[in-house]
Amino acid sequence: MGTLHRSQVYIGEDQIRLLKLEARKENLSVSELIREAIQSFLTKKSKAINWDNDPLTKAVGKFKSDVKDASTHHDFYLYGKKKD
Image 1 (cartoon, rainbow, N blue to C red):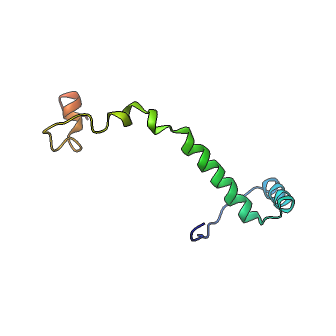
Image 2: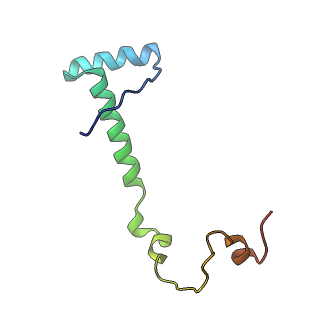
Image 3: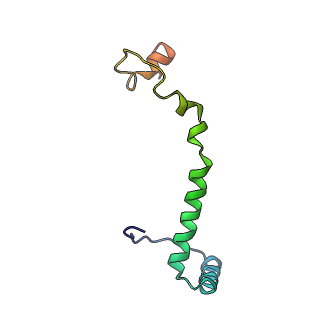
């Protein structure tokens, strides 16, 4: 694990009581238990997005255009006019 950053989070009484109980069972600090829970959450979230099967990701690099200002004038190119 890299550098740790201090953060303040407000946790309900029931949540902190259960966290302390679980931390004691796992022989961990509450902070370590929270870090593990965050890592588990983030890992699940990143797996939920399967970029290899995303049709938009597959389209990247498949098209060529001489248009140099598409990022700033995309509404014009998509709709034929500036979007209000």
